[in-house]
Length: 301
Image: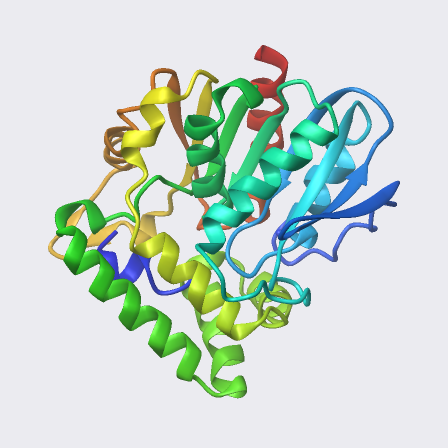
């Protein structure tokens, strides 16, 4: 969980063929977000993918939830083949404002917001900034601060973020594609076939947009904003024995849960669980366990 490892680059039974695509009942553009609607009635659930992700990340989740919920699958501008935003302002702030606008103009009654990685970070800070618009948050391996970054100063975080941005922006298109495959193989998923299938989907995102969102995330600390959150929060993290060696020390699943809980300590109502064995794309490595945890949370809140 060192900062350099966590900040490199931020889904279906492993190796299985993708499930049949769910039919959308409409798509809309709000600010810097493209939003697909699935399902006809029920509690609203908003799904926000991680860095370079799109609705494909949630294929199995959508197929499950749309039977009894209205599901909104979000794509951030610049991801999954969509045009990047203009260079004005902070892009995470713009995504936050766009999501608030969508919830208000759609008259959604405190939706459950589910976010993976960068999307989890967005969901957590949204709960703090817009407590009256949030019914609950499920963050999937997304945190209010990059793991390891809590141990460095704000200036050091900014410098690390700038380095990451420059490295990603300067990569050739082929090198960028290779980065996505390497990431999925080493960090994203336990299954090599899934890594090979998913990496090209991430790689179709705008390279400079990926670099910018990543830098904004890596350089930020949103922990203080969690104090204002009213909604219950579930953090779902991943754990795999083969990835648990941290230098000379091997952490346990319980220790990783405790570490994540410490980073989320400012939230008034938070629970952390780990699903194992899995890597960063928990919903790909443990689809059944992930689906149960998500449905149990929605049912309870």
